[in-house]
Image (cartoon, rainbow, N blue to C red; front, side):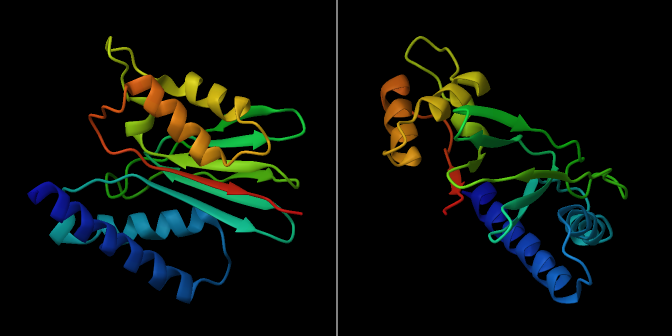
Length: 182
């Protein structure tokens, strides 16, 4: 319970740092926002020894351009609906607060109508079946690719995960899917 409470407080701290940076930003860049959040955390002695992951995806709904940067996070997934193909968009940045320079980079993807991006927690890919086998990143990609176009992808993935795990989870599971509409 103590770890959960601390995690909630830390997430609030990160949200606050992002909000301040966005209010003062001259340009919107996932890399710049990530770098500034990292510096804020790195230089705050109260939380100097706490490290966290963070994914930032800036989405321009008009152009379909997504700018993505990550700090010690799992890769974002991009699903190209015309090819029915899902791929990882990797980030290379260090955990927030780990070093003054987190070496954050920004990846850019163009979403066409029907395309989607996915962000998820490690509880998804580390979920286990009754025999102890992990779901893994490749099976998550396969589930996304096999989602029938007329179904809600989150419901489809949830149902497949419940089948895979027999509804027994060892960790929290979260997934966010964002789809480009017409």
